[in-house]
Image (tube, rainbow, N blue to C red):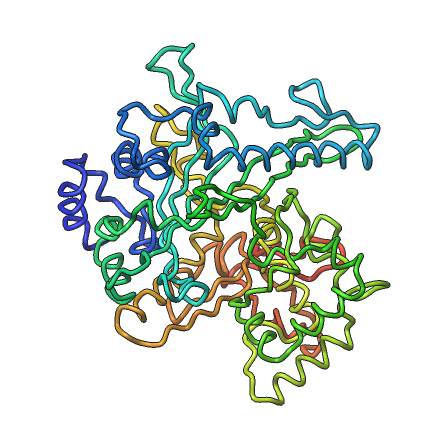
Length: 495
């Protein structure tokens, strides 16, 4: 980034002098995130240490271990909810897969995450990244969107000695804060401008009183490949909203996480959801990725299994909601709604077919977005700045979803900074918007090797209108990755 010297100066003023590599920033996330390990080490050991964010009155210099963290009155409901999800997950497994064992340890077919590690005196959450989501101002206009502090569960590993590299554990905790606190006079344009000029200067606005909620993502179970099944890993996703009066985090519905099982079981709720989503106003927001589905249709938690193939399966959150007996939406419903919206003057950007509608139903949900590109894990694990020798899995801070979306996010920040009306729309999770930029050209985010694409057919009229522009760069060809879907990946042409 061209502003690197200024970033070092700002960070020195905020946190003291840092090594020169703290100024290094990746091109795509400039102005939208802090991913540098040296900067995160300083911030994570200072004012953004998790216990200092959740318990600002605590003055101790020693980080709060998780045994004490989850004993806090504010965090006890979080532990209770996670324990309840584990109990339900085990019960569902025993009912649906009675011949496959489940438990903690390698001796089981499904190997559960060891909850004692989550509540252990030898583990804590370590700052892994800071992400600016002012591009979500459409969802939280009064607070100018959100800022997210992302923490990774880490074992302190005292038994191996103080010099041992603390191993990371498969869980992230995301503290979501309002970008502008209540009653603050600062304009959204100034906040956006600060982040674009120097993200570290933007962090000066982050306060405990801005906390809105906690989001957790935990690898609840892992099943190695065996004679009876393929490799599988399940991730538990939860949200806990902060009740400022009661000073506790309470379990809450997840944004746009459609409760498939409840909808399919309740005809009245099914009709209500169909009417709401197919209303032209809501359908346009759904197309643009800015829809906010009412909480009555949402779930309080989700399991995101991985890997998920390109063909439809019951591992996907929208499976069964479109077409078939008992579905919420029929093809006729969707086609009629799309026609009504376009005849009313709407210019749909993404959904131009039934298949496009189905794909958006998936990637608008938390679990469906996580499964895009076959990933069900963590979008932002962060670089492990505590490791002596970071592995390949921890030297890249985030998923292709994250990097592919940076151009869109940065464009929105620039519009807010300049006093222009932002375009909050987004494409499908696996095909990011370019916004006129060429930064993603030839990469695995857009049309390079490994990018998602659509196998073009003949005649051209047979190509699905929602995906026909999903092409590959020169020298690559789109190869179908499933048996029934024409969505595939860009690979080198075979001779």
